[in-house]
Image (cartoon, rainbow, N blue to C red; front, side, top):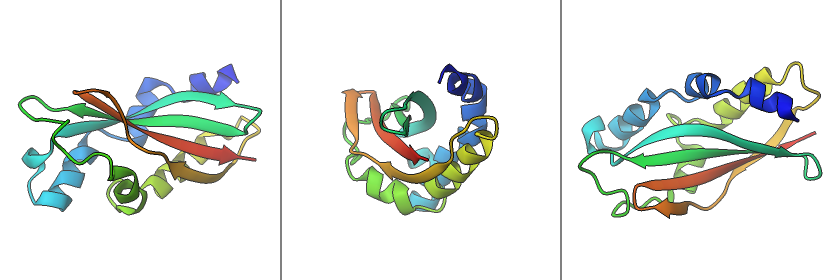
Length: 131
């Protein structure tokens, strides 16, 4: 479904998951957004029709002067799953609204284990099961 790449453009993904949400998360977590070690952005990866799943990723990009590798990013899928500022449930609801012209509906979602791509980039896969 190439059409999904037309829906989930970089601009749309920035609107779905604004850059300031990372600051809001760190403000809630630490009381100071400057304590955060990474910025968070949303990326659309692909749709696999055989699996009826859409794949997105939350990219954790190291902030200047911070150590992403020193942070406990491996426990984040559980934290992100239920944290009201990150609001994955609400994010999936917004993704579902954007599917209006596509014969897909979000049914369920899960965050998978953190993947360390490099010392400056960790990724948390968001898998959305569709019907």
